[in-house]
Amino acid sequence: MAPHTNSKEKLKVTLLTTSFFRYEGDFAGHFIYKYAQQLARFDYNVKVIAPHDSEVKEPDKWCDVKVEYFKYFLPQSFQTLAYGAGMISRIKQNGLRLLLIPFFLASFFLSALRASRDSDLLQAYWIPAGMIALLVKWFTKVPVAINLWGSDFLLLRIPGFAFICRNLLRGADAIICESDYFRDLLHQLGIPKGKIFVIANGIDLEKFKVGDKPS
Image (cartoon, rainbow, N blue to C red; front, side):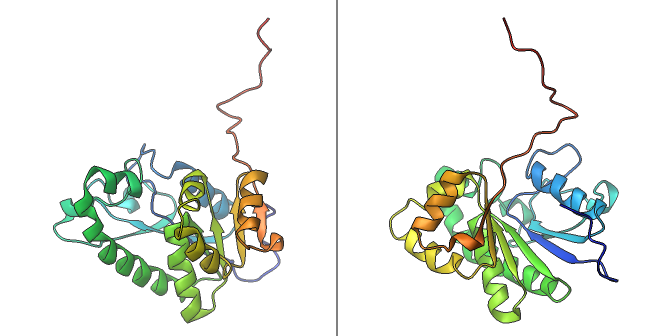
């Protein structure tokens, strides 16, 4: 990605995600945090919208990107729908968490809608955040890019859900996935190839080096 230098104003990108760093050293949404850092380094104005939970620490004290953690239930200890092994896993662990979904989606939407007023692009990670971004686009016309990953592949294979996703995802301006196989699946669901971009997962070359092959 080349630095954004053609405009007098910084391009404003809002990242929507169901998982993000909650404190220094956290592993939740690590790659999204790194991506946000790189966008900021390349002179983009970046903001992250992510769910709150009991482990969130005040971001101003440790985070070098702007982040808003939306609260969706009281007491705070009941905000257990996101993080951990993911939303689907959390619901499997305790079916009562299904009751949190309407509150979660409503709070997520309102936070994203407010952020869109000062955004040139909404970039969403995973299908739930993508649905929120597309709903915001319906009201505001702000362009939407959606990043889909392995867990989304499993969701797209659920009968009925694939039909819903197919019609929703067509509204995205761009869809980013991690493999040609995933791209072909999306195309089979009716997503135009011109909207699908394959970007493979990266490797931190400061931590992982190419070595000699074992003999």
